[in-house]
Length: 125
Image (cartoon, rainbow, N blue to C red; front, side, top):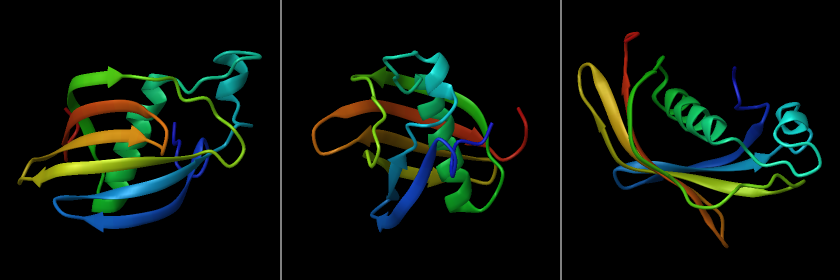
């Protein structure tokens, strides 16, 4: 399932040293929030991980396949709200011939929601 332009939409992308940052806006009307959880919606952690991969794939302009995730820490719940913006910050972005690695932090001005280290291959694993 594709979450960019659906669960989230991109407000902006900025270059940064050894990475980039993307500001995304939540879509609180997305179908996933009717199931997770009715009346008290929160963004599933798996959706945050998938969105992080989709952003990196879009940035690099090539298909990526999740190879490994390390040190995935869900620190706060991301409650969707109209106009809610979160920043996906990619650092230590390293590309090789067969894979790319990045550290990703998902946060807004008040909270850090998730920190993770991800490795993607360019071919299906």
